[in-house]
Length: 110
Image 1 (cartoon, rainbow, N blue to C red):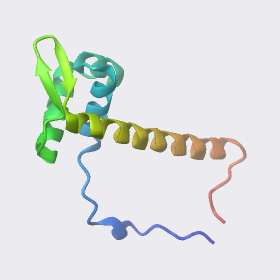
Image 2 (cartoon, helix red, strand yellow):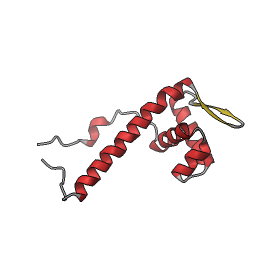
Image 3 (cartoon, helix red, strand yellow):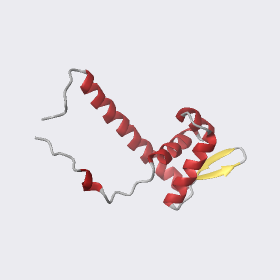
């Protein structure tokens, strides 16, 4: 029988806001706040705000900002692929679970 998740088990997990992670990850892949904004269906200003919030939360700069674009810092280049991988994994396991539900109503119970 599977182990039941106890919500209190991970109380000490320190995670930045997911909206800020998504904004940074999309901006990093697109190389622009505009591309990220189009993907996430928000304004470029919202992406900029979320990225700045993440940078303050982390205490590091993730992008160098120029008049004509963005460039990932060394910290940003290290952070981006791991976040992309983590978000891809979340999407994959979510698709798997949704597929199980539509393939015959498996409930996930052992």
